[in-house]
Length: 554
Image (tube, rainbow, N blue to C red; front, side, top):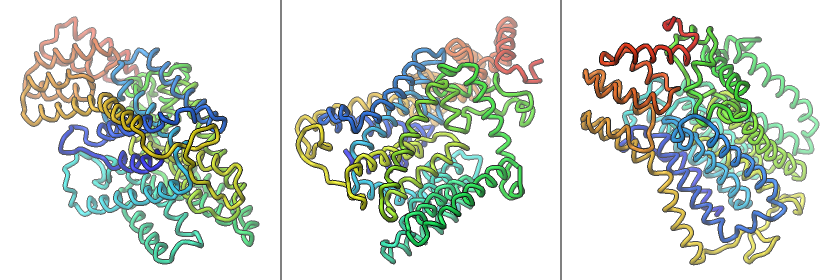
């Protein structure tokens, strides 16, 4: 199970399908995540009794609370089932994705040992290097794929320069931890130094400062522990800590256009994020128990944004995420889901602190895991969950929990025991592949493909319809299960542009009935030449209800 996690995390980050599907980033990553989670469940099945052991009790309880609350939101919300279950196109952070991430967390906490933790850090650095190299190629204008990207062309495997920047910052933190470790081979140290320079260059090329902020947050942890774990510099760590915290506060205020660093750090996009945060918080406070529905932020944003936010960039500019993972949880699932997630975060953090307290010397592997995860948390405060990054946001805390569990009765040198064959309450995970395990893996692959492939197939069918330029095939493809609103909107725009108003109106009415909160469906009806006066009036009424501060609807 542990070795498969080492493959799964980089694979989900790496996988893309630009030549096959319309959305070549998020949908293939979700499909890959579902398949990997299903296989991990099958690998865990022979040792399922391990979940009953006291050492994993908190992991299981917290994961169960989070998963059950996800289910309650899915059942109780009025948002369309498809969008909640699979997530909206371009995000795909719905019920299925988060259940799979919970599986990743549990299996990481159970299946990773010291050796696998080292390999996990190596895997993070390697996939970061590949992403940096691809970003370098993109910065030179030699990307072999033609992406529809309005921002910097440097986006690596993640579809957006902000995500690429943040991910490289996380990976660089892990590399830094190994670089400063005294036992690191000089040749490896030189390679890591080059790696850090390459990462910094590509982050700069993304034109997104998130990567540097993520790196500095994680690096602050690395250097603090480097000082704290050295007898000759331990006293310096107590002076370093308030300086680091003060620097963090100055950076935070500077990003918010306050303080001496405002001139260097503030970007107008921070103001826009403030608008998204305010709307997300309003969704949570107005729907405190179940939120507005998983991945449903976009359909509620217009109704919850302020007048200032409406006018700042124009009423047509919206967002489908709060650009803060914690607010996304509270907006989509209410405060219970937020609390459930924060308990998982707190448990992983406490596990890391326990290892630090009982460890003698600077443990580069553990510090790399911890520092990279702190970088992820820093990113999650100012951005949203992207599956290629999010999987590390659940693997890393799982690894930290596994590290703590395995070192509870060990010597101060933090030596972790090898796995032991056999069964029993004090046994790790059984080794070897039995016929039953093989059968379970095969069945899990079937289940994983059955759950993860439908969105991919529907998206690929839509791309085929676009390439063939066939209106009939286009309408058929957007009604293929699971239906996605963004593909339907694109189809309506194409049909309207070709004066096929009858077909466009049919899709618009279909979309409006399916999801009355889908603003673009009503907007399309309101301007369609074949819509009746009653239909246009009804559409205008819905638009005003969904976008109350839009001055164009007065």
